[in-house]
Length: 633
Image (cartoon, rainbow, N blue to C red; front, side, top):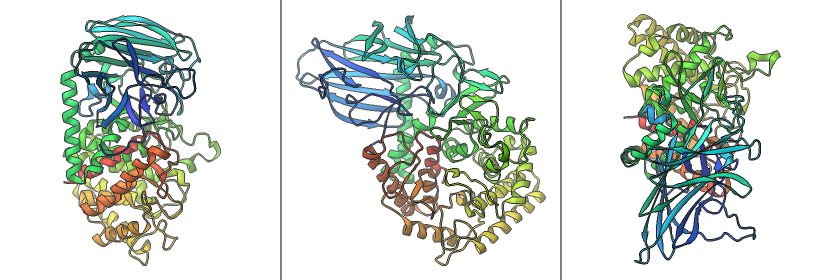
């Protein structure tokens, strides 16, 4: 990987168990949670009696004294693993941090076990006595260090030795929010084979550790059992991996025993992803989709409801913590459409249930189903008691839901999921027909930009929603109704082309704002589905305007500000051929490479196109939208 990652993924499982490193050299600072809160841990190897650190900050009291470290000589990042190379005069050490969150396999997409594999070879040709130690602090089981008293105990395993650590006050699923960490459940640390485990104090933090001799290598497993994962309409639900009764210690033992075969699967998956990305774009594109993959997976939680339905719950990270957010699912969908449509269906099921509940009284689709990890109904806009309807996204969410159902049917060549939900899809399509041609004062997905009347891009969303519903009707042998819907979509598209046109061949931000521009990302479905609602001149005019407006690190979202969105910039890059695609994606590559000096957070999707400084979002699932090019033949 040539991309200099702004933040390096180490252990990435779900919104709570997610550890990153925001520097280039892993032994200079503290590992962090994706929020930036400290998740202190230390990795050391002892060579012939002398200890060297390869992970975590120095604990020496002398300012600037880093203690003994191994020189970091290289790093590689792929879809499932981060591989780091070190050496000194005696040994060469390789550390492989692997989170086997395989999207195509629901069990591994859910199992909360991740690895560090260490191996070494002699650098001087001489034999050496080498041992390895990993220590993990209380910060992984508390919102903040010192919030509560932590305890630990040894864990019996068939394939190794382990220890677990947890908060002394177990209030499972007692709170929700955005910039918070888990403070219930238990963290597990284990080493393959015979190991010494226990607890200690490092840097005034309670820690657990595992230490083992290295003949040539050592394997550590890190795991988190959150007991219950999600509150779903007042009832606690467990993670998918528990559905057949497996315990966390069984899962850890299984993980230790299958490391080699599972790593081979991860490597094959990553290699295939890279190959596809290079074929669709170039090596730069391959680099940033591989970096995005673990982030997207780790911003979800897979659970099973009481009827056995899969639910894949997103967290709207560093936005407001909403759960099962429709306008977050929409941009993240391409990755799941390509790799595993069942997970996209699992994202939509909570929205469908809430839409049919007595609490939801509107004839349009909701924005969310709660605040992670508590899903008891929409929270977005609820503090605006006197003007609740204004703080919805009615055209936006109706269009999103219908487009996603149509996309699922198209990709699977099976519309049964849509057929089972036609009551809602019909209701939402009527809403789009009534209000979508020229939306009034309301929000769209880009709600951070505020309300806007006559939003051309929102009109495109409605047009594609209506066209998507026509595709569903056609597949369900309702041809006459489908023709009527498609005629409406065409009528609205013609209206758009006439009223939104700029003199230069591009199209406006809003119908009443001449010569403005915006990224018309919602039109991408017309290209993918070959519905031909918009002529090639539309796409050519837009691409020409985007090139004109391009800044050093991207194309601004619209005329109002200099910031952009990575997902939408990627979607519009698919308007043209490979040359256009690579032009825009090379800007994104440059942006993320620059962020290693300006914005060291897990891949932000919202940043300034002129400076590459992040605007506020990080670690969001919407980076699944970077896979849209994969959907084109």
